[in-house]
Length: 391
Image (cartoon, rainbow, N blue to C red; front, side, top):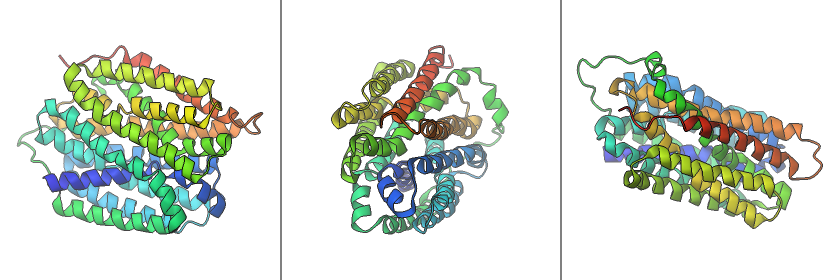
């Protein structure tokens, strides 16, 4: 079991990498194939929409055929194939197709591990295991920062993608070989998506699930690169360091929240406090968008740390799911999260385009930061009325 979980963890590292590496490659892609920030926002949004669109089929597959085949096949075809297509891209539309494939390939890996945790471990351990898995996966954000910038400059971005294609393919084959599907008790009734939607408590969690990761995924996955390049004339090394610091903050936050939840005993309270500070960091970017590279990096790192509540929020929703609805329920929550990033990427891309020509370099990014802050505030307000547990 442990070898299988470790391979799923590696697959999730790749998933985190693929959703974040465009920010660092933006200068290379702009120079080589003419991909501008709006093109990359569209491609990044396609990754998240493809990922989100797969969540309901993945939920059905987890409950029906199990996590092994679901994750291995999709990661092999989508992840490996998409990385290969990206490596051969000669124009922005090729990146669009590649990101769709990669999004499909990455769609099942985290949910497969969560499905195993929910089936094989006591409910009280779920939040810690979920946080650890997300924390491990977040190292993909670190690799998708300064190391990727160095690799792109040293061996080229195309060779880097071919290497990722090989790693993804080997990981998928390893999952097929070593992941074991949890046993399903005899006589367990079949769940349905409609049954999940009838759980009223989840409706107060869906909005925060949709916005809490949206701004974090959009900023770290794309906008931090063009923002620093346009406003501060940052080069690939400076962008790489800033994204590395933001990624480290995400890792620290993710690993901190699991034990903190166990210590305090209130998932809801931790989510509210962290989201409030996250909102404050976004407002800081709105008020001081061009003050200094250092200050903006600090704000981005704060967004990374306080925005790393994904595992907490999905664990909160997990408390209301009976065993037969675990696959469908968690993938629906994940659909809200990843779909929220896709919506945020498309909206932010349109906001960027609508702000052109801008009166100054920071204006388009102020509009984007304001958009993210407004969405975050709305999700937090609704979440205030959620229940702590099913009791």
